[in-house]
Amino acid sequence: MDGSLPDEQTAFKNRPVLGNAPLKALGIAVLVAVAVYYVALFPGLPEAWRKAGSPELYLTGVAGALLLLVSVLFVAVKRGGGGDRAPTYYIAHVICACAGAVLVAVHGTGNLTRPPALLYLAILGLMALGIWARVRLSRQISATFSQKHKNFSADGPKLDKTRLQALIDQKQTLLSALDPSANEGTFSLRPGHWRSKPISSWRYAKLVAEENALMGTREAVSVMQGYWWMVHRALAALFVLGVIIHIITVTFFAGYVADYGDITWWHLAAW
Image 1: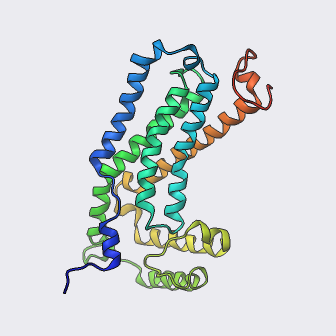
Image 2: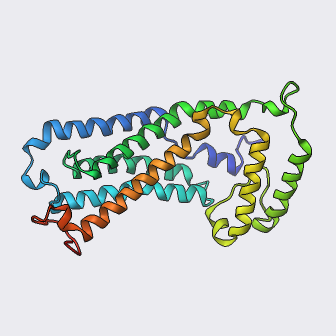
């Protein structure tokens, strides 16, 4: 024995990792950077950096939005089968999100009276929920994986094992069409499956939902553990939708956004 590790174990050991302490430090750094900018720097900046809609702040907003949308790329990689690259993209997701949040705050000139200010709330919610889930909730998730499900305990509720086996058999049959090389116990649907075989994917998802209901999977964990990701996705969807609406309004309804005054940013129409 030369003491060397298998390739997969070596890759796992050498994967990039963003620890809890650096993650919390980045979150605090964003809040401190924004506070210092507006308290100490903003009053003395040239007018172009204090006037909403200036070319300088317009480009700052574009850069910030692009950085924040890196998170979409992270989700695509994670759900698209690039599990070996997920840690690297997660780190990029966090760093770009933090930098993007600062740039978007600068872009907004501290104006909280207009609808785009709601995007700040979505960004803060995403950051707070993401850090909390990584630092605190991850411990609950780890504990869940290490404990025996109540339905398989001697004193637990009676489980309809015949129905459960039937569901597993149906899933395995569908899986042979979706991904013949996959294992039913570890398989999860990916965007590629929905694109190539939407009907089979929908049927498989329906069986998974029925299996979870039969097993009482949702009831076996806390409310936050069961639904936090739905809140996280809802906030992300709200942010993306808000960015799209903001882009459309400043590009095509520039006159309305500028209160029909001077328009200092690039646009296609001044409706």
